[in-house]
Image (tube, rainbow, N blue to C red; front, side, top):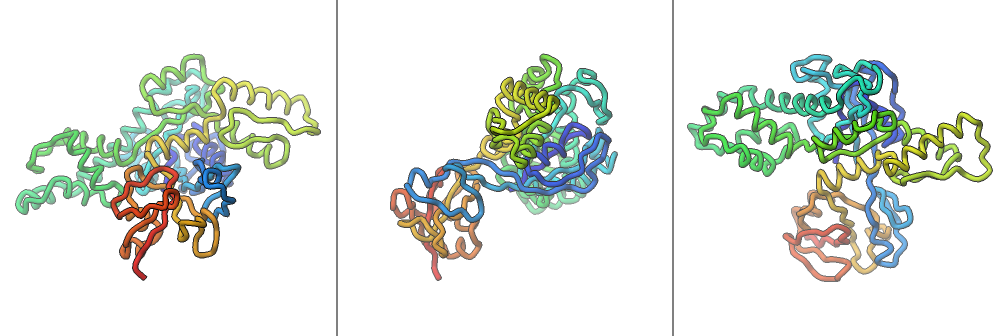
Length: 395
């Protein structure tokens, strides 16, 4: 799974990325600091079955901290997008192409309003942060529309003559965008265009692109720089976008670095932190940590971890499943207990899990065993969050 981090320049995207991954990236205060897309790994938390099953797990593809599984997700930080990026402004087409494989997008905005629509720094309150949401959505949607339009008329005429279904036509055009046929079908059901695709005008194509973006590249807003936002700005953004999270990426990054140096005790996602005993701080350090603690108390934490998890579990509606080879000991071939945690869309089946583990396992699927209940289930068994599953396949 890949989550794209998008937004205009100077809103704190790279800081957000660095805070979520602790990967070394260039962080500076000028447009287009990020030229090539940065890739890194963040983590989302899920309840590990080890406590429920009374076993000591030995994780392989993820970590476990006191019964909480830390599951890796790939994050992609692309350069700042500016208005008309879809037409190539600011190397926009290159940056948009970087998002082709993203399953969901985190739109990082400067909720303080201290950067204008082009990303030029100013003072808090100078800019209305709500504009950043509409502009970014428009850039993505116009980019998708451009991909749809490219050679569409010829394909539409061919589809009319052959009787091909409209969803197949759209799916073929968007094959490189990691958009599923089911998402295309939902988009077309919402738009309800004429059955004859040669009659689809520019307005219809845009409406299709909008719905494809909603289903294929769902977006959550990270209201960054909340600690310096004028009173009321957060509420203004929430009023137009219910999928939004207050974030303070600079605070998260600072706390992770302080934790690495042994200055504080802090677990990502916690609402606060604790200064370790015996640590001597100067007045400036005390003032900075007091400032962080005060704002975290106001918003319930830095929001960075919460944003990742809402993208994974709310926006994409993923569940966590644990495949094993021994349903009694919950182990894999090497004797590791509950070794791997996989994220799958809610509604996935036992066969889907088999294919996720290995293509051959899916092709040779016979049945599955729910290790918690010890019941045999079929290929169409709908997986539940936290399931521990053994796949039985032909050898």
